Length: 324
Figure 1 (cartoon, helix red, strand yellow):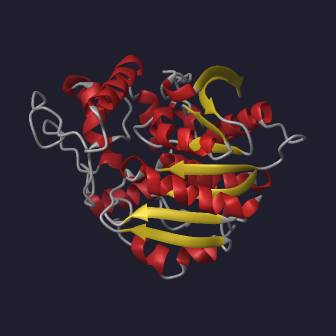
Figure 2 (cartoon, one colour):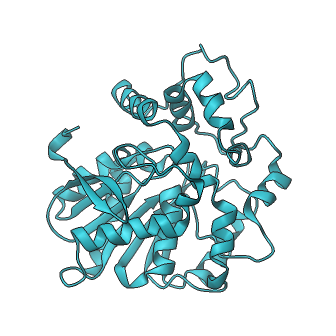
């Protein structure tokens, strides 16, 4: 999709072929999408920030869209994904030319951005992160087990754990349609996916598309996921507990890059037990000492950069402008 001058290329990084969308000249901003999203999630930001003097770069993360999807669940740990990004940066912004870049993340992309800053702060100038706050390692809280205890077996992250199970149910429902249901989920409540009644209505009922998803957008997402399947995307969730084990060595480590964190007051992550207190009562500031500001925007859901793109573009620009 050559929309508005966005260029597309495929590059070889960390043993996989990665599709990248790019526009503009200037300091590099790396945009990291979430689930079930694509580079396309950032089209408004790419165009706006390129016009404001930045080089905007948005890959499809491994397992998504035009990027390779390795077969094994074990190929989707935080180390693999951060490895992809470091290899990408070495290629498009080698350290001798641009030692540090700006990063913007949302949802899983936000989680990956936190890992990137934790493992390689030497490559990040500043981070603008949305929806998912920093999740400091806690030896007593195994993530999936905790969510299962709190939300039950039908909680979406718990349901995603067993390889093949959700793939089969999404295929029966229609993979493209299931993706659009998730992208249109805009309430602060936990996403519950009961077997046989995934989204609370029959598979033949039309999707109540979110207002920010045009029919053209919906068709693009549905077509992409029908082509690639959804296993790669689900494999990120299947590594929650593994990532927890792998990052034990970073217990009590802090994020040492400047950060601005923005979320919607109706974001389902913001509604999770303990998250509001962690964000608003000093917990995240303790773990992210260079956190400059946290902004909770009223009336906005999880899909914040889709929902209010102009406002998000301005916030990104204002924040990154401080670091020239």
